[in-house]
Picture (cartoon, rainbow, N blue to C red):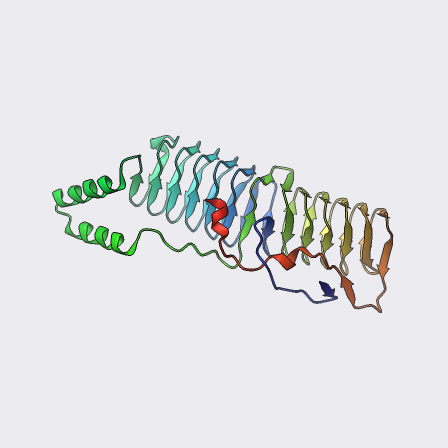
Length: 318
């Protein structure tokens, strides 16, 4: 895939192995702040607070050393540990065998699975609280209906029967601007490590060293405070500032007017004449400086070619 100077390809193909951080995301020392839905897959380690205007989806057996704060729904799958508080303005779902160390504040309804470790006194819910257990679903429905009838709650009976007819599972569609961390990712206080490719959108602010076993793609006008290391190709967009070293086992391509406050190492290094590099350049197979007369940088292995369509995204978190 070729990139023209001053242009950006917005076509994106979704791949479960790609960590995706969208435009305008702030990954600070203590918190990650985003606007859309945020998905943390199975067995991830997350050592920062999570704050979003969308929804939060946490996979199985993850560990969150921080708070979860969301305007939308929050879903935490089975076996996950949250060593902090959970605050959701809408519905909250906590899967079986989860452990919540802090307070649980729910703006609407809440559902808690079997064998969840949480202090009941720390729960504050403004809606219904449903604590599930291994009881048969059919028996549960009968007992619930009998209780509604005993209380003379005709409206409650009618609403419950309507829910049964329409189905209780809603379609989980992910917002256009979503943040996604693949299975096994580690977001520590000073490091972000992903077991695949990493794609970072424009106008992001990232604090911490970035390390990936695949390729790394950073769009324009993003700031990174830390070193960058990848086994695959690295692409750095125009007007991006990297306050650290850049190292790749493959090729490094740097777009117009970027600034690298550190050394650059790769199999080959391609950059532009208006890029500022405050360190040394090392390319085992060569270093190329694109003159102003050329209008195109080539990056055929660009990560973004694989980031389109959301399909069965949530299967990764279930």
